[in-house]
Amino acid sequence: MSAPDGGARAPEGAAALAGGATAQQRERATTIFEKGAPGRRAFVAPQLDVPHVDGLIPEQLRRAAPPLLPEASEPEIVRHYVNLSKRNFDLDSGFYPLGSCTMKHNPRLHERVAALAGHARLHPLQDPRRAQGALELMFNLQQALAQIAGLPHVSLQPSAGSHGELAGVLLTRAYHADRGQQRTKVLTPDSAHGTNPATVTMAGYEVVKVGLDAAGGVDVEDLRAKADDSVACLMLTNPSTLGIFDPNIEQIAEIVHGAGATLYYDGANLNAIMGYSRPGDMGFDIVHFNLHKTFTQPHGGGGPGAGPIAVSERIEPYLPRPQVVRREPSAPNGASRLVGGPPTFDLDHERGGPDTKSIGKLRGFQGNYGVFVRTYAYIRSLGAEGLKDVSEVAVLNANYLLARLGERVGDRLPLAFGERCMHEFVLSGAPLKKELGIRTLDLAKRLLDHGMHPPTVYFPLVVDEALLIEPTETETRETLDAFADAIAAIVAEAAEDPEIARNAPYTTPVRRLDEAGAAKRPRVRETISA
Image (cartoon, rainbow, N blue to C red; front, side):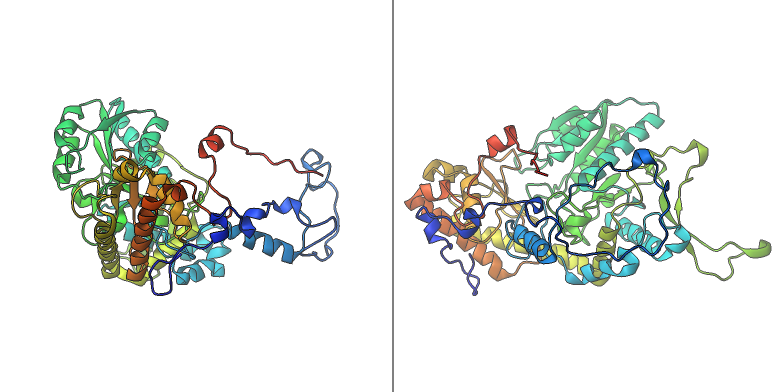
């Protein structure tokens, strides 16, 4: 737990350390179905003031009995969900340096904008003529993302980063099929996100790994040897999940394009380069954005998110439909120029005509609109220079924290590659395991007792006992110092008694779980008694 001055103090829960249990650990977690009593209500609707008419709902679609729903008062409901939220860690409560997840602060202004009735209550089936404000926002967001990516065309449809990846690989498949080519392989580096090979497999391609060089970048010679006419695409993150910007990116693009393949940019680490570098300028054909990461949408626990894609001219014909488009007013009476009237915005379902090459629709409706609103508010509130500052401070914070940890525990948690980093960095806990007998997992669990969420552990897979740390630009120097102090305290504690870390955490709502058992024997059903 961090002290008010930003330093670290001893974690709370001395009783738990001595074998006791906290109040939350003693409490049995229950579902809302186990609360309340028959007849209890949070709200009672008034009597219907319209006549009852039989047969409006076909008999075969009517329930034989009322649904089994919780019957609880409003205070019970509010307390249940507030207490449930307290059983999880959240960004509003503490530092969340989860590597490659960009857990930055979510500005409350954006929440207020997204909650405006015109946004929050807009029906997805509203006629485009009566949703001009929303469509204009989406069109302007497409334009802004195109500028950030350095690519001319954007689709907002994908619902998450992994969905954007799938869209990108499907676009690649359509591009090659249109040329009569049946390519079978997609290249991914050893440091790729786990979703990359999963996406490749889902799209029906074979995953081919490309090795890394001594500096942690793509091994250019290995790439050159594997980039042949069977390769459809190279999926790459730059900077990589090792926190390293690959200086050979132009050469990499030349090799990939020389083989007739596409170059795909995983946008998970875009927070490091906004305003300084653009994927399109590096030679990428397809980019996906994680709006929920880079552009401050609250995320975690499976959503919500959005993974729009930006593409080059040669990929545009294959984009999903419909596209959000801007239509200029038509010229009256054969006039040679447009006269009067504002532009209108529409959903273009017919782009490409009957011979369209589009991969089709990727989801129902047009995407996660609330995410678009927050993202647009973020971009407009910061502007181009502000986004550049975001990346600058994100890189500065990461290098500051890297230096502080190097001073305190560099011998036990050395940097895996290089001397400096971009927005995140990877430490190796191999010396910690060898010399003190605790694993990266133990260190991560013990951090929870200090009131901080652990970094990503055991990823990337190329680093032994990996600890992937991304502090983001919204954290203060005091927070970064407190984190370094907490890590140093845990390492010093382990030198005296490693069993403390091996049995952590002590103060969380539940103690350490059997994660292997939970994965092999998950309990996914709860029996509800009538």
